[in-house]
Amino acid sequence: MAGAVAAGAVVAAGCDHPNSVPAEGVTAGEVPMGQMTYRPDAHGQQVSLLGFGMMRLPVEGGGSGRENPNAPIDQEMVNKQVDYAIEHGVNYFDTSPVYCQGRSETCTGIALKRHPRDKWLIATKMSNFRNWTPEASLKMYRDSFEALQVDHIDYYLLHSFGTVDEEGRSDFEKRFVDNGMLEFLMKEREAGRIRNLGWSFHGQQSEFDKVVALHDKYHWDFAQIQMNYVDWHYAKEINPRNVEGEHLYTELDKRGIPAVIMEPLLGGRLATLNDHAAEQLKAREPGQSLASWSFRFCGSFPRVMTSLSGMTLMEHLQDNLRTHSPLKPLSEEEMTLLERIADEFAHYPAVPCTTCQYCMPCPYGLDIPGIFSHYNKCLNEGNIALEGTMEQREFRRARKAFLTSYNKSIERLRQADHCIDCGECLKHCPQGIKIPEKMHAIEIYTNQLKDSLV
Image 1 (cartoon, rainbow, N blue to C red):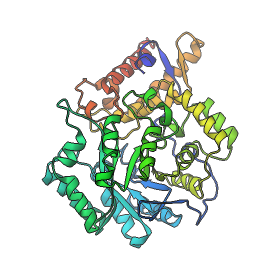
Image 2 (image 1 turned 90 degrees about the vertical axis):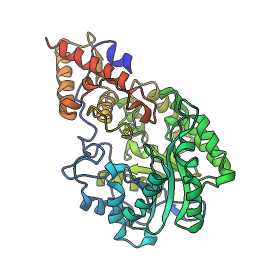
Image 3 (image 1 turned 45 degrees about the horizontal axis):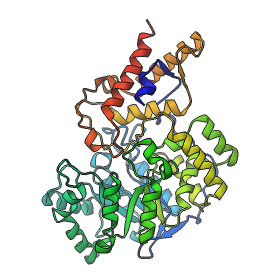
């Protein structure tokens, strides 16, 4: 990406922040009742193939708790969305102690408590990223029960392992084994306070292979992996540190471990494809959203138990419900079409950011995910050009459009030029993005546009 933004005066026009268009890529239509597709978990419990990710809860004033971290959660809207989801067959709800600045579990618990306990399944996590002492980890675990207002947790995850420190110690060992947490959680599973014990993975393939091979010892009930039609074969094209989705899924399938899918839309990027890719999918299924293709891809694999979607807007929930009620598996011809689009996407110069927010907060106030999302959206819309390849009047219009939308989308003091290369974000990025390098490239790009105003 550095070459894409620093090697010349690249201009992107009409690029608003991805949340500025409330229901982009969503199709209208009736939402079916009583037709949700279900898959069995390791114990035969029927799980909705669409899972509700409680990471992007709506906030008062619009947007989500990820983009507007200081805004109060709109509990009334959360309640409405949860009600609608349950009414239409969704029963899997995924949260964490760290989502929405620590507010997601409480808000999720409030919304779900209003429904009979047998109507919903809750998944939460041991998200002990920064403090993995036994005391802090146990407190996090017990606090989840209180926040969610439950006496048992249906799906409990060891949250996001996959790295190794300079001394060769893996975060899996430090956060879950050496401190006794995994042994404790296995006893909690035996006692019934945890119904299913699993984990979520971001990191090195060697770490994934090591932990999945421990299935004979720990009897994993499920695992959460990043999978979509781009990552299936092109994860390493986007980032050499990533693991191909095909490998992740196949290793779970071999052992009969149900898969929970995260990032089916690759941080929303597969819901806003460039015009060329979008036209191909629309020609095939004119009435379907771009997002539906991603969910149909994931749902076409039988070991997939549920695919998670963070649905800030009711329109997104409704669109995803239509896709899964019931889910229509992809044909061989449609799989081939997605493979072709994935190949094009993998070689497109976007930043491989999924807006997971693990890099936040930035010590110097940068809106890291917002900056990357803004830039990627500009690229995906195809509104880019090299200076000198368009008429001067068009160039001036495009330059003004980019600079205006950048300043509108990202607060001035949170823009790329405020990065001091402290590196604090690097150790938290699951995608291994060289964030300071990308920030400086975007700073150069923006300054080139400003300089051309003179």
